[in-house]
Length: 151
Image (tube, rainbow, N blue to C red; front, side, top):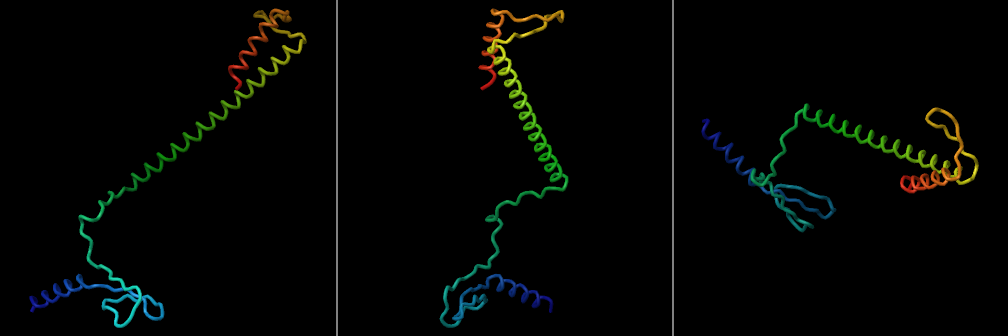
């Protein structure tokens, strides 16, 4: 009794596995999907293969990542994002500082070239004024600094 039932189940499975599925549009432009071929005129008849794909034709599935792996990758991306933002901020601060330094050099050069008296302090803290030769040297040095650093 069990043997014929087992044979029937195996045959039904084999027949179902080899069954064809058809898809077409009828006269009313409705899409019809059936396991029997259409009777009468139809448009766009298409047979759909129902055979299971072989394991050799399937691409290898990527191994499932654990929650810990995904969390670690997320934390790594967060850290990379913070590092990149910090680097951008450092560059912006450096550029702002460079602009301020260049503007100070240009102001000093203008004051040197204007001919007004320039007062400086020596190592002892005593004040003195630049003479003409020192002014010329300071102008040359400052122009060189502006040319090198302020582009």
